[in-house]
Length: 569
Image (cartoon, rainbow, N blue to C red; front, side, top):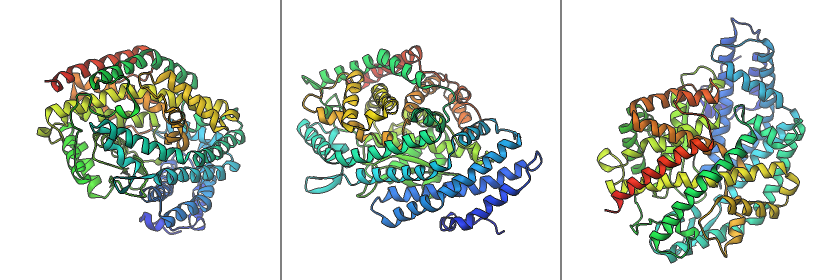
């Protein structure tokens, strides 16, 4: 049998009949304590190619959602290769588990493989393919949402800078224009939602779970916390963070001199200063981010430089490009790919730092020999990304290679720290909504009921903004949160990781070198340790209780007050 192609582009053209012999060979090989290392290495080479092929095909559908050739290629892979590969992977998992072998550094991967093998059902393979296709449809719908603004067709994402303008009437005009366009797709997204819900419930039923939440919990490898823990987290947020967010909103309302704060008032500078303009083109964004990262840690800066040199960044905004930001792990190359729709705002700076944290995870764990060791839980993945936003923030000043004057850097940091406090209540809305959906699928099958529940959760957690007269916009907002449609239950991780990230940042205020060393040490472990152990390696607590939240909110609010003094001068 010939060797697997080194070129991933060549492998992407392979049919299942060309791939299958390599799986058969692995299945037929004897497996013992002597051979297991070489066997895992061969499995890694094969699985890494399949995973990278799928991710590159997916990326192609997002960089240009109108590319029918890319869509056809991806769907052909999902129909003709993916189902067979899933079945073959299951047999290899069963072979390794039955052997009773436990290679060094493989305790957690074995646990994960056992969980995956336990929920595998052959009848679910086409359903998983169908779910991925429906995910792509959601991107197609949202990417096609454009408006005519000042005589030019632009994406909704390109309206973001208008929300920063001092002219309130223009902000409102842009906001209403975007929301009207999104509401125009309400029915088509409702129809897609019903299909997704049916597929997911069927997946759980086929696998013998009482509901999709239980199925998804195991699918996401959530061994270290329960659904009940999430509900307690929501309550802690309601108790500790919602009042803090309300204080931020009220302070903003007073500074803007408004009777009430409206949705289009949330991004404008509350001091009446013009919007921040960190960069004018994406090359400048990358250049300055790289300089900031070099100040933080030279190796992290070098990682970003490598990504630019190897064309692993797609950061501009254009018609047909999906409105998103993500980082994909190209598992054969052991390289990350960052996707972003930048429009020239500080949010773009934060997003590139965020996705950069994910990318650094790939670089730091690339030394691990086996594919299954570099598969990480989303909680530690988001700790990597959210910590990077905070760790890099002191270096945003131009004299450190960054973007801003000292005063504007303070503005940027206040915006960021306030957004952390404001985020936790929104996270609670998104996560609570999903718990309700999958505990009540027959009710959630009616999108109008989803609207009602979402509105009730919004009113519970999102205190301080006036949505009067915008009830339909508010109730349908769940349609605009892509995770609900494309990555179910993937949202509480952001809340958990944000709490860990504030602790990483707090450690850096005491000893920067030690905090960064611990951060990188945690990333280098990949998926070889449990979630609490990975957080401990970063020298932070894996917890989401009221006490830890209160400590973090207090630090955030005190820092905001200090930074505001330099803005008000």
